Length: 141
Length: 433
Image (tube, rainbow over all chains, first blue to last red; front, side, top):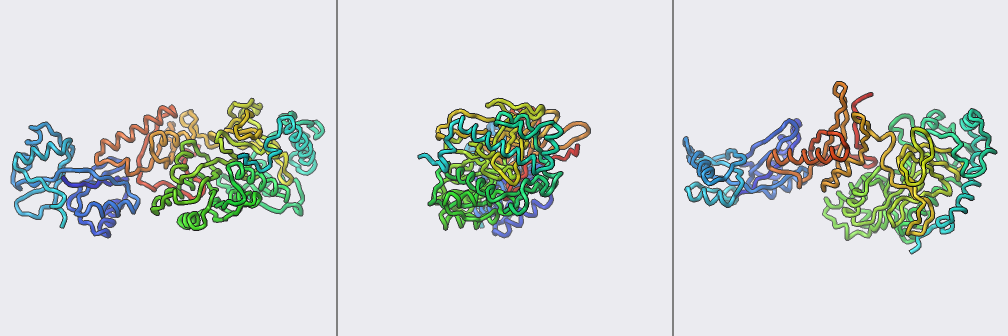
């Protein structure tokens, strides 16, 4: 399991530019991100190499942030690669709340972040199906 | 601990107090009639002569004074003494129009200082205390009022004034301030700054605070007491009557004792002007029976409060006024329903949220709309939209049940709402009615 940072942002101009600047200044490398938004606000979800450093820098700027444990998996970068993982979870009764892709630095493997309703059980199921589960240590440089 | 500054007055029997008030009223009315043209005109129009006023019971026969009277006679038209006798001028901020200017004789400054000394004394202040004053100094009465009060008591006044919050914290630490005086919103801000600087408030000597000049709730008192690790007390005043110290809280924290030997309070029905009995809420009205330069008769404060003459555990017999629960002019009328900003604050605190909010009222077509913006805190952040939307619905439902009106809730980023080091901005009304 890895730690995801969630940042509350108002839907105002320049907020993403501001946040990414803060992370750059803190020396935190963004490995994956997604934005969920409504007409008033957005939640920026980030996977970074140094979550503690990034959280401290964002809090210093007075941002409202929180940490969530999410799953990161590596699947074959071919048609059906992700389907294998999501179907294994579905067959075990695990729901996926949201998912987004991860920067791949390894040829032939696609990385995906999954937010599920039962992390421990999901890890078990994925491992039984020979799907690579990435740990926090794997994304540090 | 008795904690009296002037035990004779503060514990005077009701009969003796009425006698004193009657004597002072009679003398005041005479001076108003002879020296203030506006009062002479009003008395004449109503067919009242100063001699008709014999006791404090006759006060209800007299006309009211309004803020507009001070504006219409701007700047000095209501002063009852020649300028040789004035020693000080203060003025209101004038945010809602022309400034209102107030003047003081040496006697007026003295009774005002005594009023503040009584306030500081009643919460345990003594000669050996450092009194840290973070109200603004200047035309605003807050700073100098408490300053002269602290000196009158024999305590040591530290005139820090408002602003430069990190320096405030450094002074609290290095000088070892015992009592702090400022607006409640600035007290919260100082508390937040102390925490941000990584300082444990328990390491400070500070033990009590005297907060006023803006509306605050019991919940906010608890927040301030927690964040600063002190006892928080209320003080009431307005420049037209004197400034802070017109009424003050004692350690029982059950209302504010009015310095009624100088400032006589009444509660009236704001629509009919009828005097209401103790315990009933209405508009608070003051008559400055002890003042020389600006002796206002039945001044309409627009604050909504009630009075109590029940015995107080502190031993004072001075009448108590309840913390004002709103102002007749702060009150928003939204779709015909009365809404006070303090109610919104109460709702947020009851949900364990920080009371950092802004009410935005607008009119779309013929319909009033109310939006309440609430600052997010880290505890409120979730990684899913549905959780944050559920939070918005929780706040909206709580507002609906308290206010009886639906409001749109919009969560905003921390520290994004207007925050001042004086009075907090709580309402923006865009209706232009």
